[in-house]
Length: 111
Length: 113
Figure (cartoon, each protein chain N blue to C red):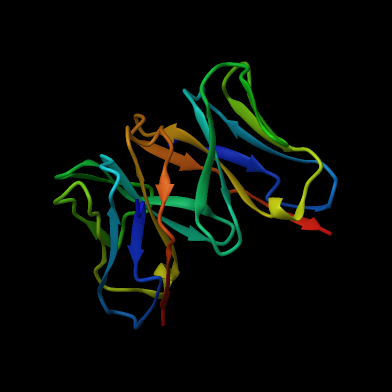
């Protein structure tokens, strides 16, 4: 089935540094979603990208969808301690009745 | 709106016991799904439903049953619990299917001893 690979699995940054997580698929995706899960919490939807080359911003978060719609990235500028958590990408699979989540990138921000 | 409600939040089972994890949503979403989350493995789909009366298997369905008799409820049944089913379980729902925003429940932390 569809595989969505996500790297890195862990990232430690000093507060104020930037952070990027990458998501890659072997096949073209119709869309990609990003979620954030705080420690001990549940995944919360951040955004969905659907267009080739799409770039969307949410305050310090920048989301990109590749031109070939096979990769995506989430970039956080000037991290804060509130950014701590695990960030997941998710793409369609199995005839578009299912979603496959990436393994997630766990972000630790050192004050 | 309560959103997606899962019960219980925590559960300890003995090997071989059965139990049902409850999931209810009040958003009139057609699509519901169950995931398990294990360290280093992300979220893996167990079962999903595209509407009342319709369910299908996900990536890791063995040892679990589901039913969808109403739009609101999507319980997950563990038939005979095994230590390998120790995990955190999340129920999710979305309005137009899996490729729209999913709303997750708070999760159930299950330990099988």
